[in-house]
Length: 152
Image (cartoon, rainbow, N blue to C red; front, top):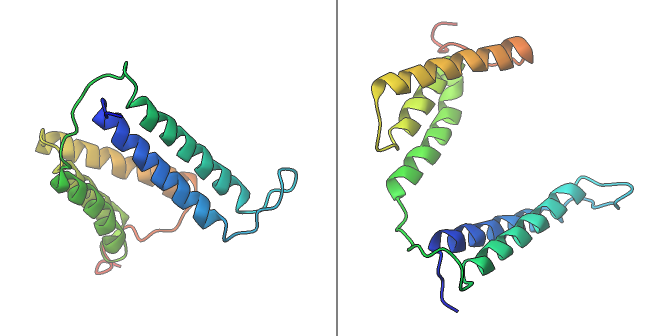
């Protein structure tokens, strides 16, 4: 069969892989039954459903009436910047505190965009810092380092 929709084929294959990985990892936890669910029951069946959805999307990408589009090459720069910003956030959380680590997260991940602009990036960073403070510090009462450890 010919792949007509490259985007759907790739996304379906990704869903199948992630779903099967989650289902396989969930088998290391006790399953239980539908009436008495163990900790592995929900992630197992959620992984199976994701894999089935991915299989349907993958099959649909090869049907004669599928929308034709070509597969674009991976944009490794974008992938590295977005994933790297999350890793950097985790590494910088303790030494820089929540506020500065969030600003770094937004600036680095925004650099992945081809429409990068400092005004929008700093506005997003400010919004995320305020939202995180209200939601996690005030709302949920979580304890995070807020400022660089040198200030404390």
